[in-house]
Image 1 (cartoon, one colour):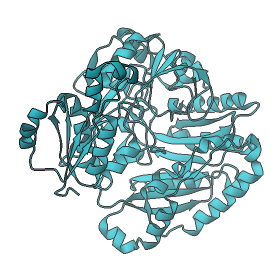
Image 2: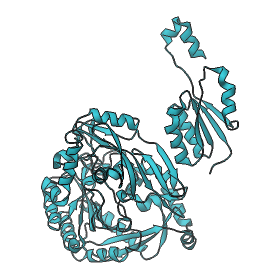
Image 3: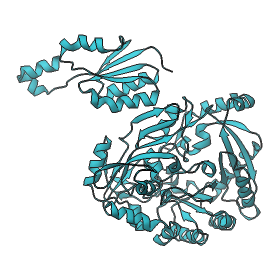
Image 4: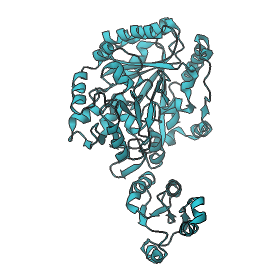
Length: 108
Length: 445
């Protein structure tokens, strides 16, 4: 059932990321879950690969380290056909109103 | 929260903990006193209700590894059988043993050492488990297999969670050619014919008899016996699946019972009418093999979501016993006679031939015939079942713990000769009081 399509999930450690990756994998897509701590994703990667029989792997990325993006892309096995990004920071509104660093972090 | 089993009796206020990983589960279990691991809550009685708390393993729902060439699968204990079937049926594999519902956890399947329609040949689920990870009361996680921690391996299979939480397990799936069953229906006009047919057709991998429990006299024990096997490609060609496929597609939308029906919906007359139709409809297909799909063949009641609610809020009991072949005819006949005489609305009873003794110290299966009947809660039911238990004990039989909510200690001890050995192992791992369910409390396990 595997096909040539490749999905990259940024923020693969989240429940939404995991569920999205599983749906794509069930449709035959190879998936890469990317998050800050790829070792923590191994359980989900194994789950997706075992359930679907397609290839799944984990890759490290820190979305705030934009300088490392080129190396990250080069480390992927080919370019993805689709990228789903589920990274975000809700932050705290009262804090963001007075703390410019916190506000900037949310806006990034 | 108020916790019950599938039979909705008994009910107990219980704290429920829901760890999200094996490590968390082991840590939590270590801290709690009077805790019992709980899977999908399909044990009928009080097996998965802790004395103080229940440790839900449903968050341990990840698949770990599958080896296509051997069929060997490793999953966490909270993975449901339905998820395994959904993932592997399209890939040509089926679980080696399945019970009457697919909404059970792998941990629960091991803890109850569940059996299926193929027990006479394949044994119970525990016979197919190669290894599992067990969280001991002390907090450590150990591997158990026939070669490693053998005593705990044997105690945990069928051990109703009382040696600690199972965290993950490895077993082999069965390769199959198609997703169809080649099914045949046999009509048995009475109990003697039912037992004879189950015995004569035990070359078929799957078989079970659905007994009309309102039939009495010369028809006592009349049944429809369903036998079947996984269909090969040539079976499918020979039997032209078109009609069966359509039927399966139609059935896809599950019916549901959204609310409790009043307890009086089921009575002697409505059930008798249902059984008459059911029996005649089944008899009309007798002798002609046909193709059936997985769900209606193995899990007919799963098609009616929340069917346990048809018995009303008071809940119901299921009585399942196993009796050796030499006493089966007399004992099963006597039990059916009493049920028929009482007229208590048991829809149908299931009679099934069992094969070898289970591997676990408290495994239910043993060679002979197992009879399962549902009963709505009503006045006198406990006394009635106590008298049924006497028949079972006199015939050297036992009552299935996964279905039980009410048997006495005496009945339990008479049926499970390895109980002392089991208690000793519980003492050795300091599981007494620490790991305890309402069932273990009631039966003094």
